[in-house]
Length: 639
Image (tube, rainbow, N blue to C red):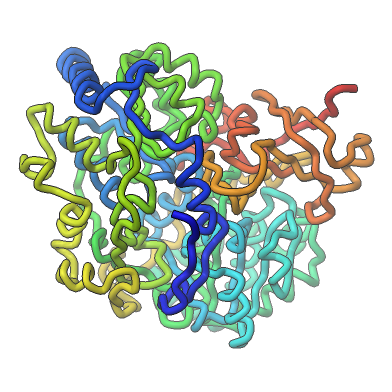
């Protein structure tokens, strides 16, 4: 494979390719790719590796129980549809409920808010740029991340097309990001001030007749009254003080929200979800969409029902699964165990085997050193991935998985998909070396137990395509239709109004959950002094580098802060918090607000988890460690 070229006739990408996509040949042939199974550091044949692990799993299950076997599903597997689904199937075959995902690393507030307000954690509002006329980008940078909450191919073009059709874009971010540079307005806010800003916007719009009518039509009266009381302390003066922005700028934002009633869209990214009260920002985002008549309607933000993962109302009376016994202060989120408790569970002897698929806890979890030490307590650490990492060196079992080009796939990120439909892509090239699909790896393990996957049929009878056909079997399209349509896909007409009518209780949004109102009353506003915020890089997918040069972590700092500390671009510094420190290279950048530092989250060269804690400051509602708006210090090294 030599080159990647976009398909100009594709209805969604329109020929666009991102930096990671264009770098696929370099990555595919790179020296870091995993090529053969390893057991305790030695290369072995697949049969030996699988037999060895199956034996351990059998002993652990019989002596410690199935829940002593855990699986962590991370972003690297998010777009391997057969692999992602097979993780759930394998956990069912094992009989374990110890299921962890990256949701409680960066996304849990989105799930918790959706469940509280609309009754299902996977309900996610999607932007329709052809219809909406006001877009708020809150602590998110879709030009680099390609969407958070709505996947965007060719984000620059999408943003400009929206503006050309009469749309206005506001970016609310302490950094003048690539997206902010394309926006009509940029509020350079203090990190952690989003909650007060959104509460003030809600309070201001409660006096608007259109917004009041939208709430009365779609919400219960007592909920509206409780919302009024909750936001009463937060006026525009409080928002101006908290954000550090001029009150006149906030008034212009209020005017835009009023003027574009019914055509509003709001994205919130990891800069807010990973903050202390990120769940409140998510809640108030929903409230703003509801009161501007922009949720579940044409012109605002819609919901995808799904093709493979079709959403249906949650069944009342279903008892929730128990959370981690070692951490009664936090519970499950959307049925998933919180990553903040994973090491506690290992140290307490409740987890004996950990299978990691498509992720690297060393670069994503709090306290990586503590995780390293806990690994020694496991009977097996199993890594299923595509590339070498420090984690592979620490693992007892390493299984090489096929990459994007070596497997067939479906577009399974349905609830955040730009298009309401489905597409199928065949493998571009044959798998290299001993790489195997994730579904085959897990299916082979299950076949060595008393509870095989795929109905007990031999794995030799399956392929990527047959597994994907099985996923399509209960959807609205015949599998043949999806397969034959190929990458251009099949369209499912967008629906509007179905969530409030069929998913919510009594057809009403629950806009003032007691837990959120109580939390808002306790909100203390942004931290004073120097704070850290995360960012994304276009060449990296979490800890895997697809393009670019070097693995050094770079910390952005405003010229005023750099001058006070006698720092220049290229200096080595230590960034420290109350929990630890990391080393990074300075980049002096006037695009970032004074008082703020920015480091790429998940970058293996920085290990931002060293600055965070899994024990202190963990949100009891979302089980999320605090990683944005975190108080820090910066010191020059080598003086």
